[in-house]
Image: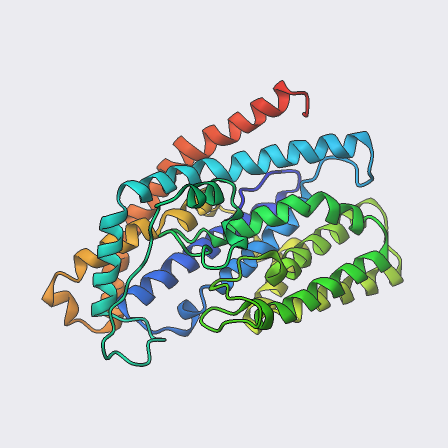
Length: 383
């Protein structure tokens, strides 16, 4: 989800298209669900978030400018990292939270009315089905949990807004411990392997302990995998790949290091789904330029723009999809269409709005936020 922080290697430009494609996957997946169009690829759009985590882990390592050792420089780099991440993520999120607060009654009503006409596929018994979105911004607790991004570690709060923001809390948890993970990765092959095993164990047991979507866990129930234990392995799968790439560029790693690195990546990937593992392999191929035509395609200007606005697409699209689908469902002609025709109409209506709104948000909210973070970093001597 994060914008590319470095242009130091031309082949990384392909990650723009990769990131933009993931954002569109989430948007089209939510849209297809909203209009009742069943498509396997779109139905598994939640997996795109796993891949965003892989990408985030990769970029955080690849673009790290400081030392990998606990020196004064390392701690300065860590503070600079925290400032950059906060001002990259928070301004857009806070702006959209404000919009949600202003239009919350309307969003609740539109969402519930649409669900009554097109219930989600996991509703087994429609008898007495009366959806209640339950998005209520009614307490100081709600406010500070969301402003601090801590809501993702509180059961029941992970999906308490109209935004797909649970993953932002997850990313912030990852950023919080990232410098520590960086030190562990710099501790050698055995430390790397131990970290991968630990993350994989957490990922295996987290659903049983903390819940998995509609299924409660033995300890509590998170409706989304919004706690780091669920997906630390995905972040690590990206981090280890970037660490390996940086090592290979500075010196030829030994066969032992190569074997341990590949093994650690495989261990991190095991708890993830097969489609995510497959796309991870494509991602790795892009990084090592093993598919030149695809690298070339994803590096073109339209994909660069799409990558630039991908965070806005991801975070803001539901604020277009919810009213857009509601408006379409007021038409009996639309309701009578086939599911795929409904989806095509919904794309035609919402896609231009999503793309234009995302571009405007990128220019007028994201970019000023990034510049403010850079200014503060320099002002307080962390650059």
